Length: 51
Image 1 (spheres, rainbow, N blue to C red):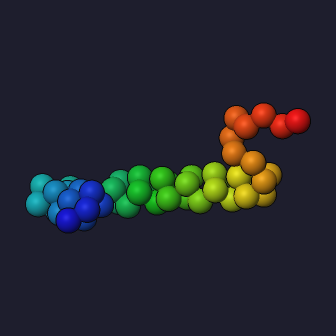
Image 2 (cartoon, rainbow, N blue to C red):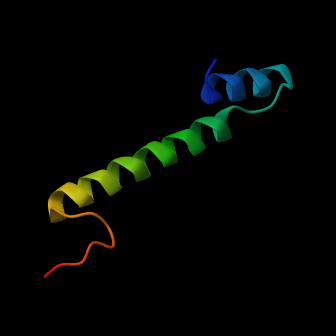
Protein backbone atom coordinates (compact mmCIF):
# COMPACT_ATOMS: atom_id res chain seq x y z
CA UNK A 1 0.00 0.00 0.00
CA UNK A 2 1.11 3.55 -0.61
CA UNK A 3 0.99 6.35 1.95
CA UNK A 4 -2.42 7.62 0.81
CA UNK A 5 -4.18 4.27 1.15
CA UNK A 6 -2.42 3.59 4.43
CA UNK A 7 -3.69 6.88 5.86
CA UNK A 8 -7.22 6.23 4.57
CA UNK A 9 -7.32 2.75 6.10
CA UNK A 10 -5.87 4.07 9.36
CA UNK A 11 -8.51 6.82 9.55
CA UNK A 12 -11.30 4.36 8.78
CA UNK A 13 -10.09 1.86 11.39
CA UNK A 14 -9.96 4.64 14.00
CA UNK A 15 -13.42 5.82 12.84
CA UNK A 16 -12.06 9.29 12.05
CA UNK A 17 -13.16 11.70 9.35
CA UNK A 18 -11.20 11.02 6.14
CA UNK A 19 -11.84 14.53 4.78
CA UNK A 20 -8.55 15.82 6.20
CA UNK A 21 -6.62 12.98 4.55
CA UNK A 22 -8.15 13.82 1.17
CA UNK A 23 -7.64 17.56 1.71
CA UNK A 24 -3.94 17.24 2.55
CA UNK A 25 -3.21 14.96 -0.41
CA UNK A 26 -5.19 17.19 -2.78
CA UNK A 27 -3.34 20.25 -1.49
CA UNK A 28 0.06 18.62 -2.11
CA UNK A 29 -0.99 17.51 -5.60
CA UNK A 30 -2.25 20.97 -6.57
CA UNK A 31 0.85 22.71 -5.18
CA UNK A 32 3.08 20.33 -7.11
CA UNK A 33 1.08 20.93 -10.28
CA UNK A 34 1.25 24.71 -9.85
CA UNK A 35 5.00 24.65 -9.21
CA UNK A 36 5.56 22.56 -12.34
CA UNK A 37 3.31 24.83 -14.37
CA UNK A 38 5.18 27.93 -13.18
CA UNK A 39 8.56 26.36 -13.98
CA UNK A 40 7.41 25.50 -17.50
CA UNK A 41 5.81 28.91 -18.03
CA UNK A 42 8.95 30.78 -16.95
CA UNK A 43 11.22 28.28 -18.75
CA UNK A 44 13.67 27.99 -15.85
CA UNK A 45 13.87 26.31 -12.45
CA UNK A 46 13.36 28.12 -9.18
CA UNK A 47 16.57 29.87 -8.01
CA UNK A 48 18.25 29.52 -11.42
CA UNK A 49 20.36 32.53 -12.34
CA UNK A 50 19.15 34.41 -15.37
CA UNK A 51 21.74 36.17 -17.45
